[in-house]
Length: 122
Image (cartoon, rainbow, N blue to C red; front, side):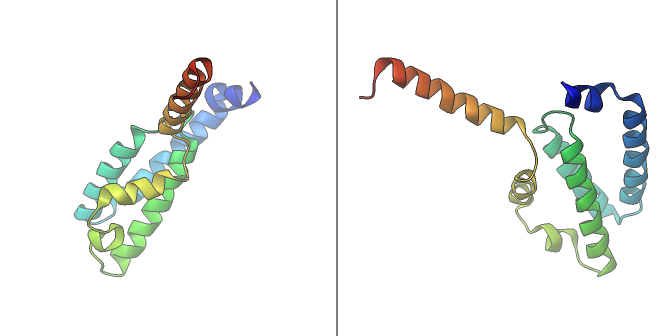
């Protein structure tokens, strides 16, 4: 319950996180256009899977900004950084985040185990 209050009702923390988010988004705005476009597409895609307060997702996004800044500074194209399969790149990023898909997987396995446990295996 303490995590709930800390993540959802801690006004001081919420304002601090919002301020940090704005600073990071200013960094995104400073990226070359192709990097901004891909970042925003990845960000939008990944938010569909975010679970809980989303703070772990923010850490991933901030790391992605650093990766993109480095790629741009080295003159690399954005797809040289992510690879051509940007969706697979996102999947790799999501492995370190708490997502709803984890909950869906657990639910699926639990429901099947409960059903087969009651009726037996065939």
